[in-house]
Length: 302
Image (cartoon, rainbow, N blue to C red; front, side):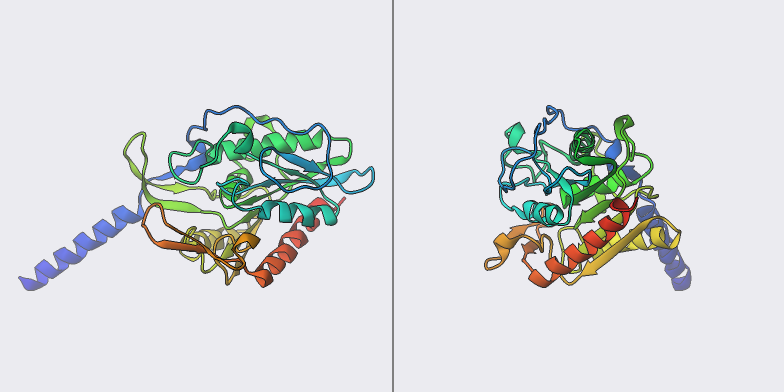
């Protein structure tokens, strides 16, 4: 009798595990987009400046045409951290025309990192495509070589734009390369507010069309890169998708110089875990080398 009870308990546990592992997968980018106005972008490039409030376009000296790079920030836009502009300066120095998107300032949004988000990931992705379309119209930009680099929420938008389902969102031309820095790849067991269903909400597609490089930190307990991203990325790589990743010994937002002396700390939205952002100069430099080696290979080839 004890043996039968034990077997029944094992079968019940297996059944439960199977049902949990078979949770419905929902593509985040199939969900509704934030109902906010479209962005407008600068008519002319300006001298380099890093500040919030509007999107900004920069170009190297000369007539070009230069490869183009769209930069999408974190959920906080440019209000707290200006690391997106550090990347813009690196890109500019490497011969890229750059459009830094501000998804929040022009829409009067100051807080966008806790639900409900005024400007969600789907809207960030559309902003990225809109920005790329604007860059391609500039006489100093090579329209066939425009890439995207996103950070956190901007990186999650980049993941969506890399898959065949959304790479041509709205009938747009796809990006030629995408770098996603410290994205969330999925939220497991999330209750959808509209329906109450508990699902695995995926940002990383199950196929990759646009060459994609994902930059992650093994100390990042906001995106849980090791737990959630690596197990999704490894099968994609091994099956021949154009995707690669780098895993650094770093926290989330390792490139934010504002945390050089005083790390930023907060509580996780879903589990209340203490999350820390801590600047790391060595990782920042290495991630820049990795990112631009990848972008150069795809955006500077003729």
